[in-house]
Structures are given as C-alpha cells and as structure tokens.
Image 1: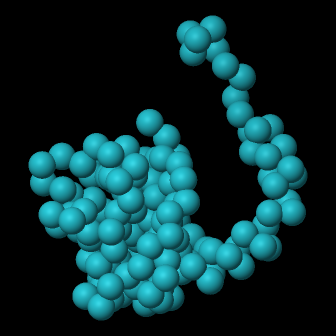
Image 2 (image 1 turned 30 degrees about the vertical axis):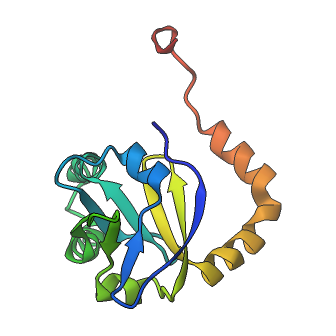
Length: 155
C-alpha cells in the first residue's frame, strides 16, 4: 500500500514524535514496533518500516561501491540511520544527530511518500511547497515520461 497524506505533529521535550495512525497502519508495524529513521533529501528525515528499510538496503547492495561517491553516500547514510521502536502511544524518539541534521524544531510535518514517510521541519516544508508547487505540471510530465510501458502481465 502506498503511503500518502500530510500530518502536522509536534516533537515533545523528550524528542518524541507521534507517528500518524494511517502511516503506522500502512507500515504494518509488527509486534516489535520497529521502524527505521535515516537521512533524507532536501533536509528531511526518512522513516521506513523494517521491511521497507530492508528492501532499500537490498537495492543499495546492488550499487557498485567502486566509485568514491557511492562509498561516501553509503557511509553517510548507514552511519546516521537508526532503528527506533514505537512506544505504547505510537511515538518514536528522534536521535539528536538526525534532529540536528534535518533542522527539526518543535513543529514538524510528516508526509507519506509511497514506500516511506518523510519528517520535515514545518517551516522548511512550507518553503519547499512554495518553491515547487508552481512546477507541479512540469514535474508530473517528467515523472510520468519516465514510466516504462506496462507489460501485458501487469494487468
């Protein structure tokens, strides 16, 4: 199931964030309550289910570590990625290093983005929206042009 939606949240004084119920349900969090936080792009934190993180890691394993930029990315990504566990109120604690990396303040926005969620500082998300909303049609064309044609077996 694709993760969707925009949810405004507050990070409490203990650096905990309540995961929106629709996202928690879509992640199909098992009994362990395990999720993964990792550096995202454009100043956000990515939030993955355990299975989603494993899928992403398998894709990364296919990238050639022979290039210096790839090795650097892998180091930066995995060194800052962290397993987190939902508490009984469906909250996760955001580690200081990721909080600082994304510049998260008290007010944040959690977005469903297909196979993962993103956690943005509210002000940064509003700036991103303002800066990119006018490009939506062009972005749509570019994204849809990259689709591979459906095969008869996809039906």
